[in-house]
Length: 336
Image (tube, rainbow, N blue to C red; front, top):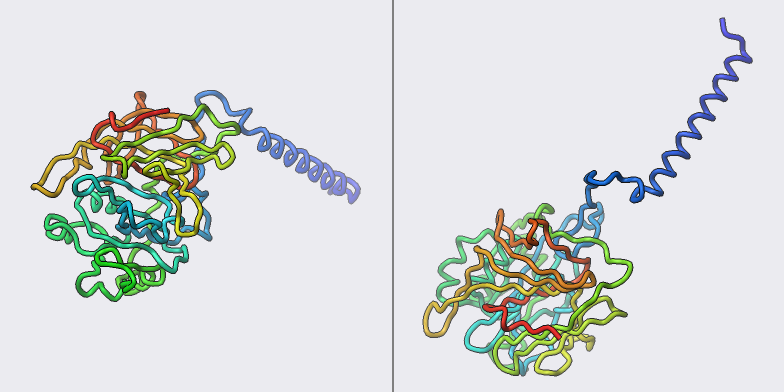
C-alpha cells in the first residue's frame, strides 16, 4: 500500500508535468506560423462570403439581397451604396452603366435606390448569392426568364410594390426606393433561407505592407461613364471618380473599394436595344487590392464565378468592399 507521502509526491509530479506540457503547447501555438513544415496544408479561417470578415456565431445568420441601382450620370448620389458589400457595374442599353448592389440582410438602411429594372446577366450574378433579387420591371427577356432563377424575386411592378415607395419629388422612372425594413419583411413572408457559407471567394488578411499598386481607368463608353480608381495608402483602398469628378455616396463620403475585380465578359446584342453577356463561360480577370495586381482567368464553377491564376490557385481578395467591373474587352482597362 502506497504511503500518504508517496501519494502526495506523485500528485505534485503530475501537476508539474501538466504545467510543463501547457507551456510547451502555448509556445508552439505562439510560433505556429514559424513551425509549420513546408508543404503542410493549414486550413484558413471561415469567412463571410460577401466581405471576407471572419465568420462567428454572431454574424453567420443572414441572407443576401441584390438590388438594381440607377447609375445615370445626372442622378447621383445614390442612396444605400455605402453599406453594400459587393457592387457589380456593367453596361445596359447604349452607353449607360447600371449597378447591382449586394447587401447583408443584417445591415440597417433607411433608403436604397433609385431602384431600376432587371437584365438577364445581372440576374445570373444575383443567383450566385441566392437570397432576394429586387428590381422595378425588366427587359422582356429578363421578365420571361426570372421564374427559373434560384432566388426570391421581388418586382416593384405588381404584388411586390408593397416593398418599395416612390419619391414624388423626383421624376419617373428614377424615383423608386426601398429599405432594409422592406427586405426583412420579404425574408419573413417569403421564408428566405440564410446564405450558404461554402460560396465564398478566397479572402486573406491584409498584408503588413501594401504591395505595388496601380491606378485604374475603365472606359465603359463615353466620358460620362469613364471610371477612375485611385489607390489610397492611408485607406488601404481605392477611391472612385466618374467623369473626372469624385463619386460620392449620399453620406458625402467618397466611394471606396478594397478590391477591384475587372472581369472581361463576352457580350452580344439580343435586339436593337438590349445586350446579353456570356456570364457562365470564362475569360480574363484582373484583381487590384493591397496585395497588388493579380491577373488570371474567371470561371463559372458550381454556380459561382471564381478567379484563378495560371497554376489553378484562386486569386486573393482582402476583407472589405468589392466592386466588380464588367467589360467586354480588356482594352477598356487602362493602368496608370
